[in-house]
Image 1: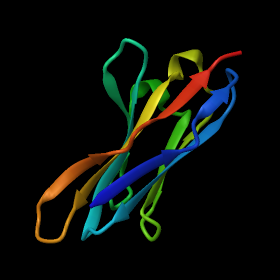
Image 2 (image 1 turned 90 degrees about the vertical axis):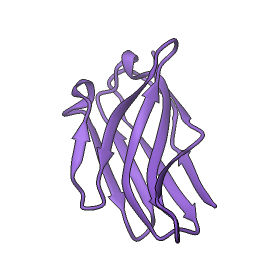
Image 3 (image 1 turned 135 degrees about the horizontal axis):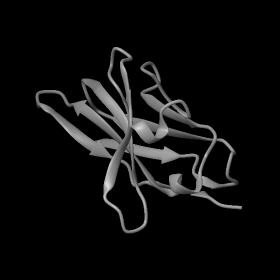
Length: 120
């Protein structure tokens, strides 16, 4: 079993900051890429930021320069530091981890999502 749990969402004013965290737990061989995705009201789920196991990062154009993704391989966690938040960042944020379980091929595992609301 692999479990992915996000934390850190909430309400923040425009221009403010928020950090999301995600922890992967359970029985597995390794975690490959990890990432954050978001789904706003009435919208599809889009990629926000991803990070490989080597630390290579990729960002959506809309968050470049404002968001920073990082990971701690020893703790099986990934973080998303969000600065200069805008109302359009309001969404449910999901963590995804590509995990290789013992004796199995890699597969994607998703968290349950955490709400981020940017509003005055």
